[in-house]
Image (cartoon, rainbow, N blue to C red; front, side, top):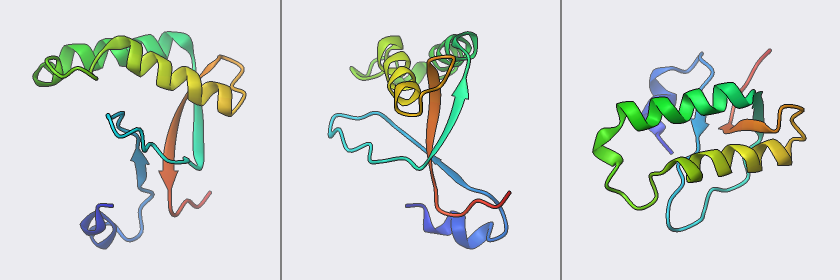
Length: 93
């Protein structure tokens, strides 16, 4: 965990996002935000366009990102089928 983040922004909401990797240790997120299929595709396009330095990595492809958002959508029963998942240690509404 990024402890300096928590020390610097003590009064802010900090959402820890998921990074797919070979170890398969994504964990169990505790916050899901449903997104539309259009937004899911826009996110994927953004990742592909703006993170060119990652394109050579085997895990960095459209199917991985789409699949993870679809899986998270399934877990939270998102009506639009897709969701983003985060680890939230502190969240106040």
